[in-house]
Image (tube, rainbow, N blue to C red; front, side):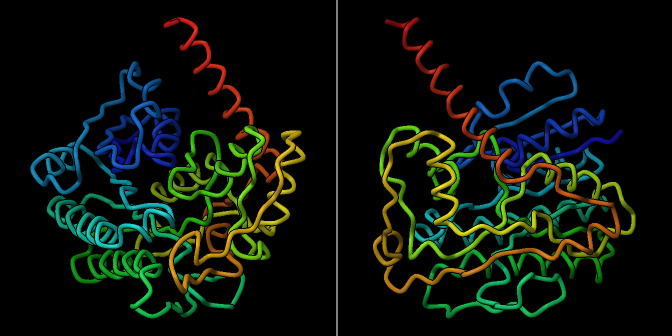
Length: 333
């Protein structure tokens, strides 16, 4: 049993991680400023005797310092998320990611508390060496394209974390998450599966950006959070970088068609040019698939939930949410 702090713990991945750690017997502390997280995500956890939360920012050093002191391990998930948010708010993206991580590492170092940093598959940038391996070169676009600011900021997070390990012996672990999906994920910041599902259920056009031939590999949030917890407990993970995700690829066109069929939707599938969806000259990654052999060798990690089951669970979650909203509206009518 451990005392675990999750920054960004009211977010999609953070709230699922809180559930996983509580199931393992941990005492869980969450800090989140709700800029992208939602209080509804942790509402069911508030009754748990080992769950504690505070609505605040990781930039509030006195509060964060107190919570880090109370814990054994810090899962640092607080970050700007989603392509839409990143393109629209590049200043916030860079400041949130770089400065937030800087504060967490600085405060954790005072008591040598273990820190697990969540990075992203975006750091591989425009590399064509698929599947992506942790020790390969990163290929980013020009600094004049704000789309790459997120990848760059997360790469700086990684460099800083590794520097703390080598120079100050702060135990750190870095994970690169690949398209994590599942119930409770919102499409508000451009996440593709919740957007497609919501559009399909509403019989609205399913909007595919670009030509739709870009491919992704989607990992189930429950598999990902179990992997995070396993790595944090493994002494040989310290000082290392790990990919976490699924290796089964699907094009975005095929994904849209599958969601349309699974929801029984009458939606048409429409394509929107990147320039119109995001910004002039937007560049995308044509493929994003992880090599997960490193984490498999260390922890035995293996994805257990494949895409069809993921989609079934997400669709059910959206339908249940609509039923809850309808019931609430009926009560107030």
